[in-house]
Amino acid sequence: MRNLLYIVMTFVVVGCSVGGSRQAKELDEVQHIMKGSPAEAFEKLNAMDISEFRDSATMARWALLYSEAMAANRLCAPTDTIINIALDYYGNHGCNNEPQRARALRHAVCSGRQGGDMLVTALYMQKEKEFYLFKERARKEQYALIGLIAVITAVGIIAWLRYRLRLERAHSEMLIAEASGLKCVLHDSRSNILQMENTLHGLLKRRFALIDSLCDTYYESQGTKTERKAITEKVKAEISSLQDDKEMFAEMENTVNSCRDNLLEKLKEEYPDIAPEDYRMTVYLACGMSNRTISLLLGKTIEVVYKRKSRIRSRIKARALPHADEFEAVFYQR
Image 1 (tube, helix red, strand yellow):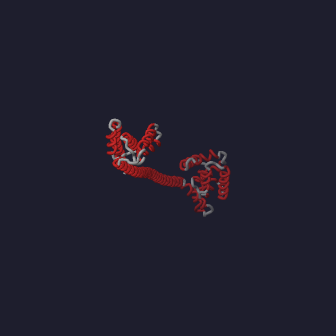
Image 2 (tube, helix red, strand yellow):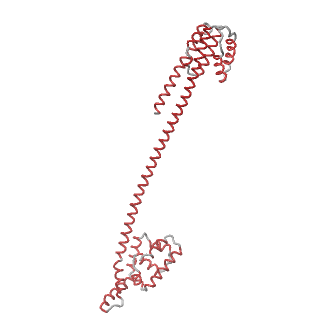
Image 3 (cartoon, one colour):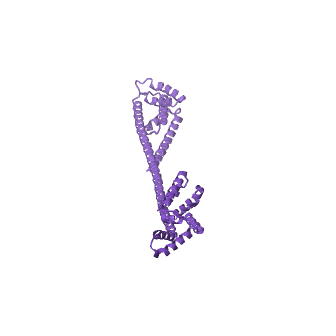
């Protein structure tokens, strides 16, 4: 559509320039022969179809030469329409010499109108009609040009809006694709983290499952019949050895730090004055041990274990440690 409009405008401009060039040459020729042969000049001016002129400048020049030819041939104009064409144009465009010439010619051709030549009058009236046709055509062309400019402007705006819409659509699609990709990555990451946490917690529980089971067995076997005494004593001996096994406790610490993002290292760094027994209880809790097991490993009653858990949790919360949420989560386990 835009290319078609450009082609039409090109043809209009070329047509106007070709027509204007031909008419300018004819007027140059008339001006050249005006002094030597004013009758021939007048004849050539009458032969020109001024309704086909392309611009007002050419029309004003023709009107000035036409009036000059009439004056040179001692002819009278029935009206001052034609000379007024030159006066109006040159007066509105700030010319100096042409308006003076036009006023002098109007006086020359408009005086003595009575008893004018009928043929001259007919020719003059014909040129007036052609001038009115020129004005009507110029008015229509002006409206057509305004319409064409409006159409081109509308097409340009529509094309620009469509281009912007395509850019916005492409940008939106890119953002949607990025969001979808991030959503998939986030979902995969969450799945991987959940799977890793489950695996690590499972490894941690299985790591100390035997200790937990032995301690539960001993706790349930206290005060039973004598036939279970040997088993109870053995389990008690194993638990007692665990209470003083520094190597085993260090392994517990390393396992907790590996599986829980250096939880115990953070605790010692942020709470350096934690009591040794409180720290040991925290390690046992981080390993997932039950309150029964912890009471046996610490050699305390289960009521003491409950109270100490509550006291440690309160102290951590009161200190407002950077990783307090991670530390407190340990004390909410079974």
